[in-house]
Length: 231
Image (tube, rainbow, N blue to C red):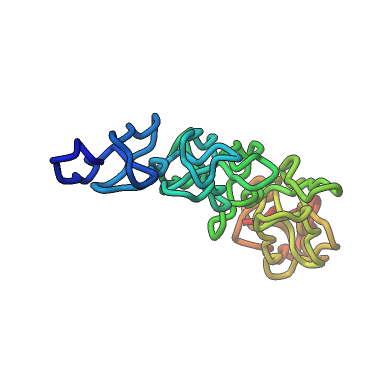
């Protein structure tokens, strides 16, 4: 700015500006904005954005909300990517914890997944049930509502689907992520929690369950309870 008739013009210092020629003094940048040497205007700092209606003047800067961020200058705050969030007036976003997710529906804030579930590893935008649990999903928005342990005779490898029924000649205990094949000389129907020894065979393990399968009965004995549990 011009200092007087006999003085040369000087550049405004950093943090100050002169928006038009012929100004006697440089103005100070508004709060939460800055400028370089010789600037004609100020721009918002990172984590802040121009107040609507002042985008070209940057005479007012407002903080980015939590879940949003800004690198500064003239642009508005931007939403954090899915699976990430931020504190207020942030310049970057951070990934949510493994037990949390974020998306537009959560306001771009990290939100806890239901019990017995975790965030989808690739995106963090939604939740999925752990292995051994079946999902209940909202028909309205697709959000995971709850995860329920699979009953005996059913299984789930995890995800966003209900527990599946074990096929014939397999069985499972409660909370299984897969079904076990029936041991030799035993069989089961679909959805079974136990396999049963064939006629003439009995569980090889004392107590009736185990991985040893079914043993042939001796010539002078018969099988009683032929149940064989999953290994």
